[in-house]
Image (tube, rainbow, N blue to C red; front, top):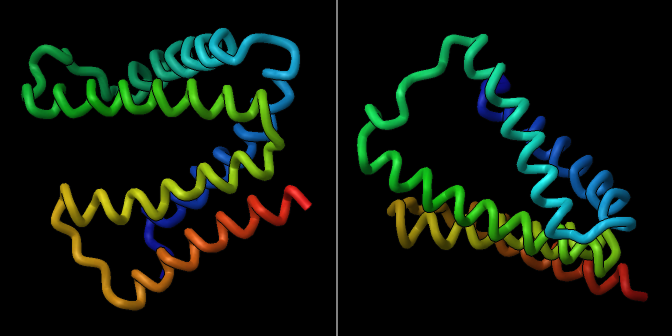
Length: 144
């Protein structure tokens, strides 16, 4: 049985792949930092009606401080990631940039162990290693 998180994760992967392609086309003609700002504005503008129409709005200042702190840190990391990703796409081939970007899967596993206390199984570690190797091989193969 497919769980809902899996469907959402699969959709995220599809949209992330499309993001790489559309970003590569977009940054071909404008500065990557300006492109990141435009993308951020569009995401912001899209989420406002989505949150309001689904009844999910609540006063952010009434939320737990720890939740807000980590969301702000997450936003800073997202912004840095987008700036770096857009610049990489402007400078390099989308297939290579996306391959290296997927090393984030490996890093998430390590950070999840260090910060969240998760304990992947040996089979999961094998998968994580294969993802890392695959990302590097894809990047190297794309240069030949």
